[in-house]
Image (cartoon, rainbow, N blue to C red; front, side):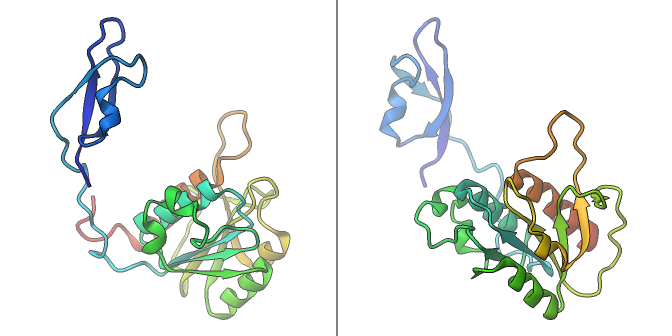
Length: 217
């Protein structure tokens, strides 16, 4: 992969700075005004690739009827970053077999193990029979606030559950969940984007249950 640089437009009054690969011919012209540009110094990667340095945590996730390919791709990236063991995809949730998912997942779909089932409730029941505790991330009346909940030391692995962007988690899946956790909403909106909510919950639960990986910053 070619290193990136921040390019500078030379047109007075425009002065746009933007990132682009050093070998990208399109960067020679300003995307805003079309004037010639000049690159700055090549950038070193901000974070070294740590994939494979730490074993996955006994933490998984069930994604039920997530309709957005972008959201699923983002969740794959989060799952890789947080060290999840496996993703279980159900219903209409796109899988890595979809050609457009790779664009959103940026290779994480090749690193994170996954499975697919048409019936999310049946998949939830099977996971529970396998010894996983299902924790839903959902704003219900009985939900525990994520940051105030005592997550304790669960007996066995945990699977976080997120549901459809509009309908939420299927009640038939909630029936298999031992906990329901909610994120605080301090503004006027009642919920976050599902991929954003999953990212917050996954990192919080990962660190609360298992601590940060040794040497991780």
